[in-house]
Length: 306
Length: 260
Image (cartoon, rainbow over all chains, first blue to last red; front, side):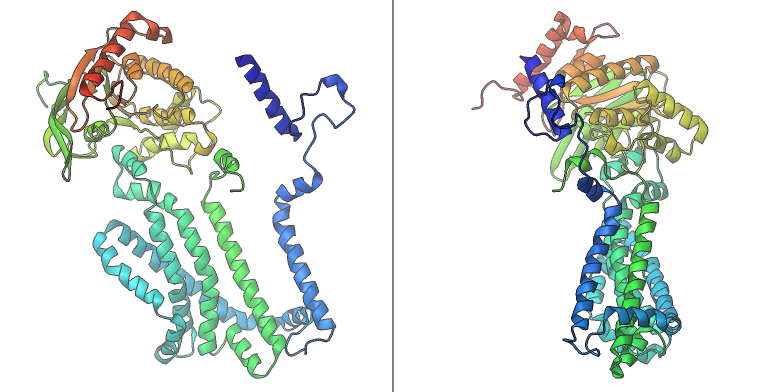
């Protein structure tokens, strides 16, 4: 009885491995049909490879750009409404000097503002985890600060701090502060109580418990917040530059709009996109370095595509 | 220092209440050094509370827990704790999880690592030192947790339903391994379990707890010779003890043949 079940199990396992549904176990000599150990087809192997992560979106982008180019070439739209992608690309690199020059203050504002947000947000999140008083005092303020439309505050910053870098930096910090602080808070509270009990039974100090348990447990969540934050940081910088600044990609863009210079507007948008994308990828790379360990593995595979 | 006659571990009228609920009431018992004590009782009867109190992670509402005559007022660290879930940190490999113990204690690195590898080898995990918890089976994870609890060679080993989530075969094997490791070291063990068989198989003495608020309903010495083999479970002495403990649960109303 148990023998039959076992052999059946072995059979179905074999069938799964060779990808041949309910086919009866082939006697080895009967061959002639499929190859004995069929490998996954080329297409399937490609789709599961890391290369596909790059190729698939690139193909999609290529299709979109091709359609765009076709629309422009057909003459259905005026050039000042929608310049052709080729022309935009030409502008991006043709006027590279100008764009590079104007990018510097924008990028600096993004970096400094974002760093400021993270440096302020993390300690606040930590304080909120360890002190109920701090949590209760700060939480409502955080919500209110998030609900206030930050774009509406931007003119105020100009009045207070002028047209230089400072209002931009503050705008960037303000706009990406909230996701970082909220996700960090969630992260720091995600540590399993049992893990904390465990290190406590080892005689861990609060400091040790934080760095050995709470911090690593919080990192994935912190990175989730940081990724949202970094994309918002670009928005913050451009908004601040729209409202009033002496230099920057946002200034270039708003000036070009005034001249109906769509090509420059598009090229500025494209460069801003590139900056945002590069920053996001950099954060993801940092995440991969700081979060070692396999979070995939057995259960990951077993949970399939659900 | 306390008098030499003081028992190694002593629960003295230990009571623990959470808000209105009394988890453990006026519990008193003692352990000798090197004794393997098992505690069986229904779910939610406060067994875990007792272990946490011994580890100094929670303080009694009234009464005392004493180790070598000294009341436990802060985390007692000459102790290894094994939880029901292995509680391995997912971003650490098996070896790194074991070494958490020495990192927190700031023990010398090289010596700790040598010991950790040795322990992992003793529980049959050589070759898995660099595997992450997600790549290990439930039994393997619990073995890693056991190694972690033993790394600093503690006097007391506290185990809270450590094998509860394992399948029967894995459980048999890990019980045999635990017995062997205990016989080599003779640490004082407090082992909480739901399984009467497991308690009788492993322990020198079994305490049977009543439902909440927990009190000691019965106490059994297990006179079986060591090392005990799996076959001992079908022996007359073993079956008699298991039957008697089951009988206690029936009298307590924890086990009944029919539901009214």
